[in-house]
Amino acid sequence: MRRLTEKQTRAYDPVEVSEQRGLRTLHFAGGVAQSVMRVRDPIALELEYTRAAMLCAVLHPAARDIALIGLGGGSLAKFIHHHLPNAHLTALEINPEVVAAARSYFFLPPNDARLTTITGDGAAWMATQHAQHDVLLLDGYDRKRIVAALSSAEFYRHCHAALRPGGWAVFNLWAEEGRFHLYREAIETAFGSPAKVLPTEQKGNLLVFAQRQPAPPTDPAEVIARARDLTTWGFDVTALAARLFA
Figure 1 (cartoon, rainbow, N blue to C red):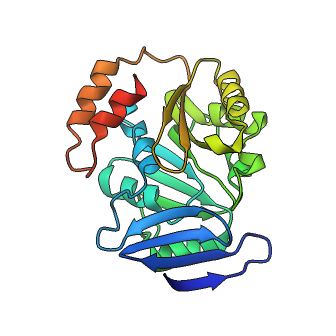
Figure 2 (cartoon, one colour; figure 1 turned 180 degrees about the horizontal axis):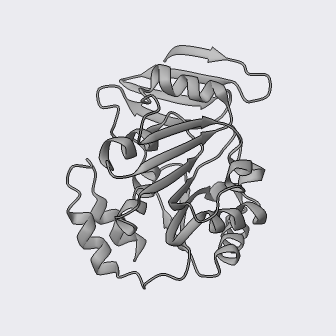
């Protein structure tokens, strides 16, 4: 393994970037990988949970405004910027060293008309948003666990309020943490409706999909049909969509 950089930010976990066998990884010192990128194909989504999270764009194909809390190496930000030309993404990351690493080592594009990257507190920012987004992607972790401010009942209520009716929020949770059932219950309480859960094959990730009501009923056959058309995404979107409704 070749370590590219290691920086200590006093207020946050140390950020490390390493490379092995063509895979570049961002992680916090002593913690699990936060992002993985194949150097020869930097837009591709290497981790399955990031692929699964992109079902948000299949569930809401007309999404114009997307927000991401927790940048990591920028895998989702790059993919959305490349594949969803009609959407604007706002990405929040509290650790400035993560933003710097994403730009220096993971090819995160500079801000432009379709991408705004903000170094700041995602929980505080979410509290200021009111029916301004079609999709929310929530992926805020430190080196050990989900960030407490991004897993509270209050935060989940703010996520619900930040969505337009019919909008979707996707929460990346860890099965191993032992509090998944509490998080899911709090999400469903905040959204006032049952959520959909999609386990992924890597790291025990569990993705929770919650929709702001009122919204038309979701037709699984229609969602799966839309997934079949996404042949340029580089992975089997149809199989993921089918698993979501299994």
